[in-house]
Image 1 (tube, rainbow, N blue to C red):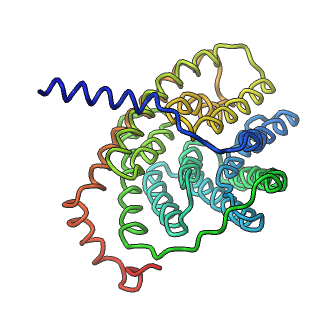
Image 2: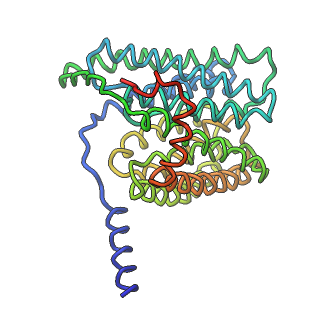
Length: 362
């Protein structure tokens, strides 16, 4: 009997793994996303500073938050996202000056970002890229005097992405009507305060464990935890974890192959644009397939300026352990979030700490 259940479980997992979802995403969207991320890299190459281009291209990720609403609402949304991305990165860079504060800064950033994302009902990717910017910033060595330059670069990248989004919107709104702006719905205490606090604590705890285990540049561990723990239910969390692990393992082989090729700054920029295009074309259809290309994309985004033939294998190995730790913590956090007993016990204590006027959010 148990063996039959196990076989049914395996068949269901296989069915979910090979299922390709339908999507009405226009082909122009992945092209525009690739431009938003890739153009700062070409500017950086032109001035001989690829490292500056990489920081700005991280800001270009805000393009992925572009809603399908009227033009004015799109631009307001992206300008707010530009500020949030710059602020998150600034928090991360500042924490690098005092490493023991990294866990607390990342926890605070994750809680604040997730509260705002949930309150305003922002669709996927939600707060992932803001928290990723904070995590990457925390592992970006710099001096105090370099902080304004770095924050300015990520803000310029976000502004360029907003400009790309403006022209993209002019084209796409001629082909399809904008969706109406969804009125804000009353938000519950659990959805806006309790869940973000618990998720933020697990994100910070993941970074803390990574530091204890002495994982090198463990920026991807808390991001992996965040991606997994945000599942709508335990089934979604398990599926997200298994797809991410499978995609990451295959993506590491792809990254190893790409990094073994002889490339310069310009070819690396084209490679980054191609990866962004593939990811945004496939992520809505098959998450595990997209995760294969997310792995080399984020590795290049965070480390391309420092990679060479001697340390690329070490970086790939570190990325695997980061993902493993993050997925494990995300799964544990998911069980806690969806446990009625945990929510009752911890949620009751949190409610007593929160002022009465903040408990009825609407």
